[in-house]
Length: 294
Image (spheres, rainbow, N blue to C red):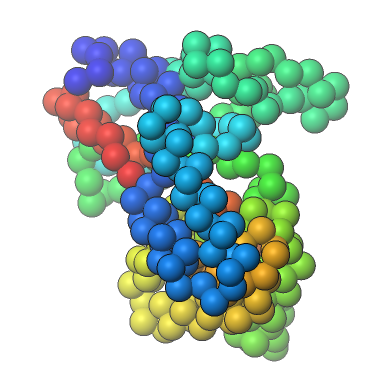
């Protein structure tokens, strides 16, 4: 239990998740980086990834941020069947938590007005944090995933409204061209999220959601899983490598999420997460018990 009141608990979690997501790199990402450091054929690539692993070690020992970019705070929330929560109060509490994390932990506030460029120094503003809320009858608890999204990777976000005639070949071409064109700007090795189908806005959302999946976890649909492996191999075969300086490890993984779409459309979107693969997850049971993990 973090607090006896749900909204006090949510505020504390908003603070905790935002900080911990930037300090504690998930174990699946760490394992993928260690494999790359051992297996990449490029000495330069191995050196870069070894430096990344040393940065993680320093963060572990000193409990400091792995990177100065505190990113755009994004919450993915799933409300289970029978879990009673006031959505407006929930978002307000999590927003207060992010603001507290920024001021109390001396984080860099990266959030500004797009017009005046005013910075409130709280990592919050109109429309920020971003909240994606879903409902599930498969669970009976509240699940929250925090993703801080840095600007380097977020800048490399692209959508293309393909036609059905372009088929999967068009999807593959767009994904590969996007990753190669991004170069070292998203701080590779990246986790590449691909959205296919839906509407334009849903497709982009699917691509970003795909980056939340743990490294090495394949899509449950065999055909989609095969496409994930094919695209990952193709991206890594480009030789772009860590930080765009050459090597076999341009991406740690590639994940695809899909939605059915209009008969005349075949949208595809790409969203990248930098090598940190930052995420932190919390589960609140109906009895108030809280679990925090990855």
